[in-house]
Each structure stands twice: as structure tokens, then as C-alpha cells.
Amino acid sequence: MKRYTIAIDDKTYIIGLEKLADERQYRVLAGGKVYDLKIVEEEETDASIPAVEIIEARKEKPALVHKPAELLPRTPKSGPPDLPGSPETEEELPAELRAPMPGVIIEISVPPGAQVTRGDQLFVLEAMKMKNPIRSPRDGVVDKIHVREGQSVNFDDLLLSYRER
Amino acid sequence: MNLLSTLFAGLAALTWGNALMIAVGGILIYLAVVKEYEPVLLLPIGAGAILANLPLSPLVGEDGLLTILYHAGVGNELFPLLIFVGIGAMTDFGPLLERPHMLLLGAAGQFGIFGTLFLALLLGFDINEAASIGIIGAIDGPTSIYVSNMLAPHLLGPIAVVAYSYMSLVPIIQPPIMRALITKKERRIHMPYSEHPVSRRTRILFPIIVTIVVGVLVPMAIPLIGMLMLGNLMKESGVVQRLVGASENEIANVVTLFLGLAIGATMQAQVFLKFDTLLILILGIFAFGLDTAAGLLFAKFLRWVVRGPLNPLIGAAGISAFPMAARVVQKVAQEEDFENFLLMHAMGANTAGQIASVVAGGVVLALFAAK
Image (cartoon, one colour):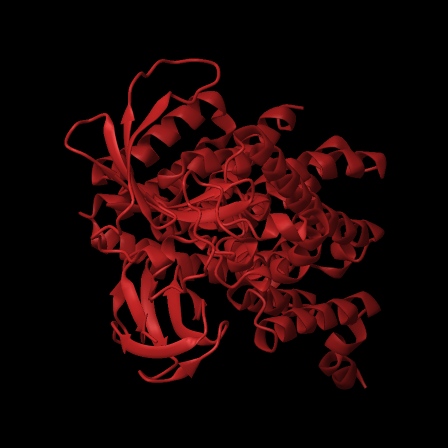
């Protein structure tokens, strides 16, 4: 599965997209739900968006690597995303933190078990010779840190998980 | 008495202009040492300025070291070109190859060249001088030196000093313009990070193709782009590590020292202390600001065209100052939203700016050198 951060009208969402065995079918993870998309017809038009038909919208929670919580919009106060079929209103906090870009972890700023609030610096990630602070996206307690200082990480590598309440 | 006047001949020959230029050299060294503004260049330039302005200095005599260095590498364009080999060997065009559309932003970032050129014309500089001053808007030291030495060698000193001093001020010059032109809401736009692994073949073919395409279109840019891409080809080929190492270390370091000293030596009082220098100082900052503004506005326009997630801030990175401009973009974006990471996109625009500034240098030469 590939994870995408997409923006619709200035709001950003994280969705998962997986190409299925059939070249024209995709499985999409959005707003905590899984949809199977099939491209029914594809032609070049001026409008440039191919017709897509939702052939199945499964309601159960998916058994995927990424927890659905982090598929909620990144701006928590903006309410539910306008993606198709995502009526959930309760805010789920991300259970983990992933690398926003490739680089080297040069500093781990908090120990496991630490109580952090949104905005606290958790790591320093050096990318392109620039030191980038990685801050906590939520309040919570650090459960596990999955990287060492000096370790190179790729985009989307797991850095830290939060303790479940 | 005769003995005394011989002993103090230096003191007697010291003019106010020399003294002032020695002070200017001192300021450049201060900026290099204390503020760490481009120290690798400003320190030798400052030292060169002092050495050249000491009265009766044998260094700027007919066979003086500074004179020899000037003729060996500045007058004939050798040094800036050798530096380009090193820059090419140090540059990773990966972020650009992953996002080729960033080339457009690099092109927009050159607008300041032409805007400043026209303003310089209005202020009474002749066309070659105006073009040389405009090229400060390439925000690229070696390109500025290369072009101004061809078109208006008498302005080389002020132009090089202005270009390098302002380049180190990019983190101070750019953010206010970015905040003024890009709304808070726009600054918060996230851009999806997409990883498109670039194959080794693409990385190797890229410098060759760019050289051929640019070379055919803008022959005057061949020396600059050719050397830049030669360095990059050596780096990406992976088979000539020794040459890459020499280009980015030994050759680049030695040439930087020689270039800095020779440029500093052009700052002799009678040439440098003119009203023109002051105008160049003002026009230079205008060029930087115009580049930034044009890049930002073009990025806004681009966002309107593609209607996709594009943070207009990355337009500010479409200049040649690498990697400062990209870092500034990342910093300004994070002031608004700490979860926003634009660095890799900005790097793409930034390397595009490097290529575009070299091409722009060639275009300026093609337009004006013949006259």
C-alpha cells in the first residue's frame, strides 16, 4: 500500500492507495474506511478526470499496516473530511509518528515513557544538511522509539509510537 | 632626512581612498569571521582588498602575485568555470529529477535579472554595465563574475562583492517578502511527499542531455553549463571518485582562494570608490527581492493552474543560492505549521534555480556581448 498526503481545497488528508491485481482496480483507505475502486472507463477528455465507480464500500475496519487514526485530516479542528463516506466525527489521535522525509536522526529529544504535548520536539532529523525538528502531532505518552541516533530513515519509516490510553 | 622619507614612503603614498578601502576589506573580513557570511569567499576578498590598497604594494605591480592571479584566472574566465566543476560535483539533482516541473520555478526566479537590468538602464548605466548589474539577480557568484567580466570588467569588483555579500543575507532578505506576498493560509499548504526513485541511468543522462540542449539553444551558456554538468556527470557516474574528490575539494578550494584574492585586488580605491558602487549595492538588493517576489508570484500562479497542493513558498527557492533558499522556505513554512515539510520540494526548485541562473547568464551574454 502506498500512503499519500492529498489536499482538497487547502485541506490535507492522508489516504492509502493500493493497486489490486486487476490493473484497473484500486483499494483506497480514507477516513478510516476501505473502498474498492474500479476504473470503468478511461478516456482523454478536457475535464481530465476519469469516471470512477465505487463498487464496494466495506464498513469493517481494515487489517492494514497503518492504523486508520492517522488517516484523519491533519487539521484536527476542521471536522470530518469531505471524502466520500466518512461520517465519523470523533477525533482519533495518531498512534504513531512517521518520518516526513528521508534523512538521518541526529537527536532523540525524549525518552520512552515521556509525557509530551502537541508541538514538543521529539527528534531532530537532518536532511540535506539541514537540521529539522520533528514535533509531536498530539498530546500523549511516548511508548516506544523505533530509531537510534545516527540512523538513516526513509520517508514514512516508523519513528515513534504512542501509548494507548 | 632622505632616509626618513624613504622609510615612510608608504605612509606618504597612502591616500584617503586607500585607507577607506582597507577599512572595507576589514569589514569583509569581519563579516566572514564574526558573522560567518560566506567566509570562504569574503575572507580572501577582504584580504585581497587590503593587500591591493596598501600603498606601493608590490602584489599589484606588474609581476605581483595578485596581478598574476587576475590574469591567470579572472580576466580569462578560468576560475569561475573551474568552480562550476566543483559545484556540479557537489550538487544532487535528485530532488529536481523527481519533480521536473520545478524547472518552471527556477526560470521564474531569474526575473530579477531583467527587471534590475532595466532599472540600471534608467539610472544611466550603459547597456553592458546594466546587464552585468542585472546578473546579480542570478544570485550566483561565479555566474556574476563570469558575465560581468565579459561585459563590464571595470564593475567586476563591486558586482562580485555585492553578489556574495547578499547571497549570505538570503535568510534575512527573503522571509519578509515571503510573509508579505503569501497568505497565512497558503503558507500552511502541505505538499505530498512522493518518492520517485530516480534511476542511475537517468542521473547520468541528465547532465549530458542538459548540456546538449542548453548548449544548442544558448551557445554563450556552454562554458558555464558544460562545466557544471561535467562535475555532475563525474559525480553520478560513480566511476571517477578521485576526480570528483579533487573537483569538490582540492580544485574548488584552491581556485576559491585564488578567485577571492584576485577579486579583492580589483577593489582598488580609484575604481571602487565611485557613486556607481553605491548604486550597484542598492540595485543588487533590488535584484534579490525581485527574484524572490517573481518566484513567489509565479508559484501562486502555478498553483492556480494545476489546482493541486502546491505551497507558493517554494517559489522563493527558485534562485541559485543553494541550499540556503530551500532552507529558508522550510523554515518559513514551519513557523506556520510544524508538521509541514517542504524541504525536498524546495530543494528541487533550488537546483532548478541553479541551472536556470546559468542559462540566464548565457542568455544575457548572447543578448549583449556582441555589441
